[in-house]
Image (tube, rainbow, N blue to C red; front, side, top):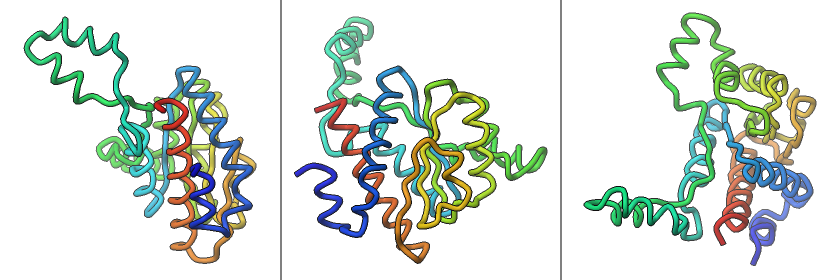
Length: 209
């Protein structure tokens, strides 16, 4: 069963999201194939989702991710005592950074400059043309998220938005937007989780199957 089939079996109301889910997959796949990385941000529950997404991308999710044999050999040759251990305990990774994790930087920037710029500053510092900013906001009007998206577009960073039924102000700032057609915050967030799990499964199958 494919990731999309599983998604729809468990969340039939998310069927309208499938075309944009496929577009989001293509966006992320193309960025990774070109050597890009993913930056993820959101507030509150969406901050927790940002961490969750990075966890699924940076290590094995559903499949084993054996590192390339050439890297394995370099570790064994370069570190005779522990090279085999290192090689056997590393996993293939899809580079991703959670912008909600930089506590010292965020609190310093909020205190010294502007709290609504905590993600935008990191996009400016980390983002490069061809990367993807994956932004989550149930309302679609979270100012810190919108500022991050605005800076991303100025930096040539692709933008992927996860939001609620209306989308708020996000759609005009996102190359791809996924709207969860549910009413409550909790229901939208559970829809986001189902969608990003499907995306992570699709990406893992693409790069590590």
